[in-house]
Every structure is written in C-alpha cells, then in structure tokens.
Image (tube, rainbow, N blue to C red; front, side, top):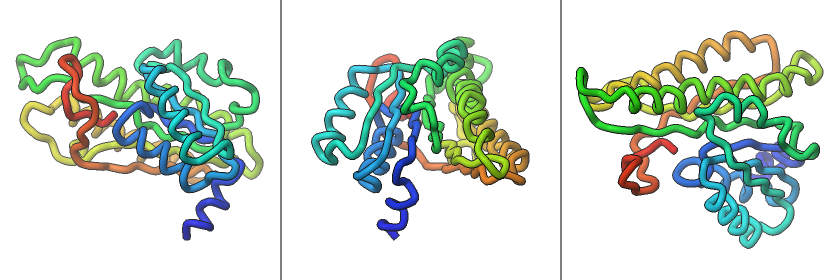
Length: 217
C-alpha cells in the first residue's frame, strides 16, 4: 500500500496551507515520508520562519528528493491568494494536490457577546480563505486533459456537524466548509478532479495569548 501511494505521488506538486503547525505540519511531513524520491511541497502559512524550519527538518530527515518551497501566505487576504500561483517559481506552478488546512478558532463567547472581529477572522480564514484558495488552484486542474485532474482535500471539523456552546461561529464556519465541499464535488462529478473532506476532532497546536490553544491550524 505504501509503495503504491508513493508511486501515485511521484513527480507531483502538493500545496498545504496552514503548514506551520498542527495538522498542516503533520500532513506535510507525511507527504514527504510517503514520497521521498520525487515530490514538490509548497508549504504556506503566516509564519515564514517556522515554515523555513520545517523545510530544513524535511530535508534533514528525507533528503533532497523532496523539494520544499515555504511561502508566506495569509489566506484571509484575497489579494494575497489571487497572486499566489503567479508568484511561484515556474517549476512549482503545475499543482496536483491542494490541502486546504488553514483555519482557526478565536474566542469562546456566546451570543450576543461574540466580538465582530472574532466573527470576521474566523469566516475570512476558515470559509472565504478556503474558497479563494480553491478558486486559485482549480483552473490548473481543469486545464488538464479528459476534463481535468487533481485532488482537493478540505480540512473540516466534527464541529461542523455538531455545534457546542461557545463555539457557534467556529461551528458555523466548518459547516460552511462541509456544504461547500459537497457542492463542489457535485459540480466536478464529470471530471477526474477529486474533492474530499476530513473532519478531525479537537487538535492542540500552538499556545498563544492571542490565538486560542486549540486550533484547526
């Protein structure tokens, strides 16, 4: 099974958003370990210094068969996402796999005390950021022969299926991801573009006085 997966990934270019910690970081490492001989990894997050450290770790563990490109990107800013593909070196632009992982939970307030800025940052990152990334990469997939080819993997959350007190906005954002994923899959049903969603439970990532300890990062 591992050998077959390595063969399928050989020569591919993979984008992982929110790759600086948590699920994104682990996903990047797993891709590298699965296909160590010929893989291009584009790792994005707001913290470029952490991405560079991760790139060094991958090279140290895996070797030079995996080419890692760290890119500072804030998916909540549409202008950054729209210029993303054109900003890449030519050899990294033929993307095959998009992992929409970047996301966060901010605040635990209940209605009507939820801060406007918490609502805005969660939706602009978890929902519209994911949609803008998908729209930036999807044209690459659709240009391929036989109606298109590529993989979109959206990281949702169990919270998108069942709400919890103090998490209404985060839950709503992940429910939106789930519905967007389902609609996109139906839109692309006649192509070879695969659309998937993974719904993990609570994940502990970076501790910070600003961002909450538990993030789907």
